[in-house]
Every structure is written in structure tokens, then in C-alpha cells.
Length: 219
Image (tube, rainbow, N blue to C red; front, side, top):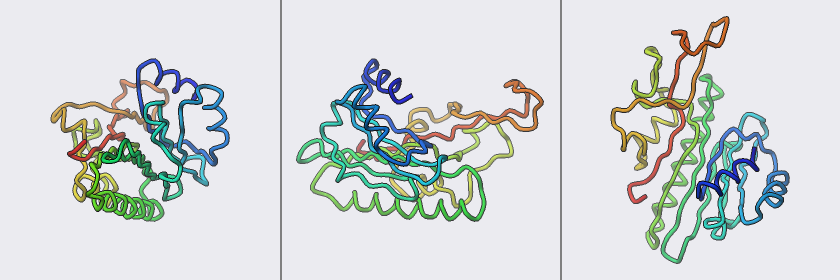
């Protein structure tokens, strides 16, 4: 899969890719695949102790040359990471992958609180550096919806105290898709419940937009 992604990035001129739910526990395998496929690429893996967590930033050559492992940090058992790319002496591109838990229970609520706390800390640290132009892109699978436009399930509502609500209400990050398409309905995930088959036309199959790309106004 990683080799295929690198080939697609090369073909379509994609400079950065954020991947969630990687289950990656080390950089060794990832680094070997990249070295064998295209050594001009770089990957930054947020390790996890679970095969259902983890995030990864994959960079093409134009951005990879600005990337240092000393400027990469990850948190929350691989659910959140931050890579600062110093493009020049006055410009920084901050890439922040995020992957939120899907279920809602006491444990996942604690995970949400941890993600929100660390994300707030990252953004505050970025804002304090007023000597450079700071661009921020935060993207990933938040496993939540922002409004009824983001789901075909009439009973689904945004999670109370969830990370998505926090990003929208408590930070200066903008939901880029919704900013460009205020009323458009588009979905990135389908979930089927209680079916004997997998027919996507059955009314119990619901779709939702749970994958987001956020950016600060400067970006």
C-alpha cells in the first residue's frame, strides 16, 4: 500500500499525505519500503501500542528536504502528531494528523480529553512564535460530524465534548471543505447496521463525513 501511495503522489504531484489508523509500531518497515521505492520521500510515524491506532505523514521530495525528525512529535498513543517544516527563515508549515476514537465510552472520552489538551498546547505554541509566518494544516479521521449536513442518519448528532466540536468552537482552525462548500453534502464513510446483505441502497445504511482537513486563516 505504501509503495502504491508513493507512486500516486509522484504521478499526481502530491507533496504531503496524512494517513490515520496505521497500526505502525516502528519506523523500520516504513523506512525500508520508502528507501526501496523512492529514497527522496520521507515518512514520520506516530507509534501506537495498538493495531487500530497510529498516524503517519508521508512527504514528497519538495517538502521532505525541509523535514527533520527533531521537529516531529507524537502524542496520545499515536492518535495525534505534529511536524514543523521550516520552509525558510520566515515560514513554517505545521502538519498535524489526528485520529479520534470511534466509540463513545468512559475510556474514549478520556482519549478525547487528552487529544484536545495536546492539540491546544500545540496550537498555542505555534501562535507564540510571532517571528515567522505560521501555516497550519490539521487533518484526519475525527469519527464525528459537525452538523446534519455531514450525515444521512437523522438520529446522529455531534459528540458532546468531542474533539471535532473543540476544534470548531475553541480554535481558529477552519473546516476547509465546509468553508468552500457551505451547503454541499458529501461523505467519507458508510456504515451498515442489521443487514442480511451489504446492499448500499438499504435504508439502514448510513453515510457520514468523518474525515476533515482544517487550516488556520493564514493557510
